[in-house]
Image 1 (cartoon, rainbow, N blue to C red):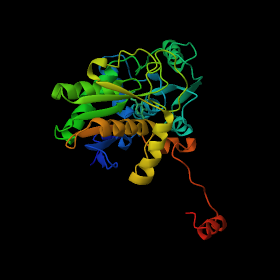
Image 2: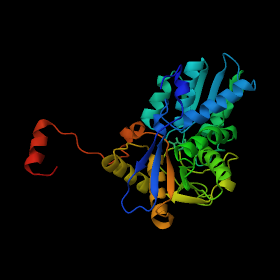
Image 3: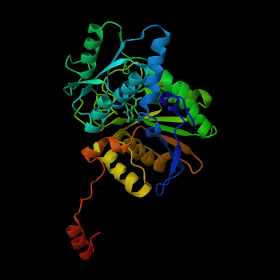
Length: 325
Ligand SMILES: Cc1ncc(COP(=O)(O)O)c(C=O)c1O
């Protein structure tokens, strides 16, 4: 493939079969970390920004401002670098060091905000981004949490891509819900193509929705329904599965060690949920597609994959003698 710009290289990510033991049906991982910015968010960020350019909401020399758990910020920073916009991203303290540094590497300014229980809190990264946006003339806030164009991106690009790659044979779709853009956009597209396709969303066991309004902290970044979002379309979602941090992270170690896939925490959550679901409900000729939203490389300092020791030659020779590796 040859492209004129990194932005033209967004999409057409690989679909890779994962052979999990005693799994009924076939599960494929859609490896969104093959996008140039490293995540599924490249698709929606570009779609929202180009929509704003077309409708005159964003003009040359403007500033892009948004709140992000990291990946959307990376995508906005990458797109801003190429299109010549200044970029300001507000993040919460939960963000991994790798994602924080990646946003800055593209030349964007980062504002750190405390992790708040509710997005409406005035100190939250979303409220802070809104204030900054209002204070800067000729700025545009994609506002991924409240802009329904976010889901339209996945309806227009990711949904058709999955349909094509499975030759219309997909029976189940699994994705983590953060803003809800991915599950709602792809879900709507697939249901229009075949209303029998099951659309299953993963949520954190500790989110606002999962706890009926009494959220607790959780570690998976990017997944968790913590407010009522217009982007999340309940009409196209058949089921929500609530996933613990522990189950998501354990699956990451299995994926890396047994399947050679170093994926990020939401992928661990999606794979755990899809595997459990497949064992209980999928038939042998069913085909499930799981969104692997980003790479485990963005979280290595958080040790989300069970770490092994680093040896010196001497310590290695001792463990070899003791036959412990
Ligand atoms: C890696 C990853 N996976 C999944 C999601 C959830 O996607 P969406 O916001 O479209 O619901 C996010 C959101 O930030 C993410 O960063």
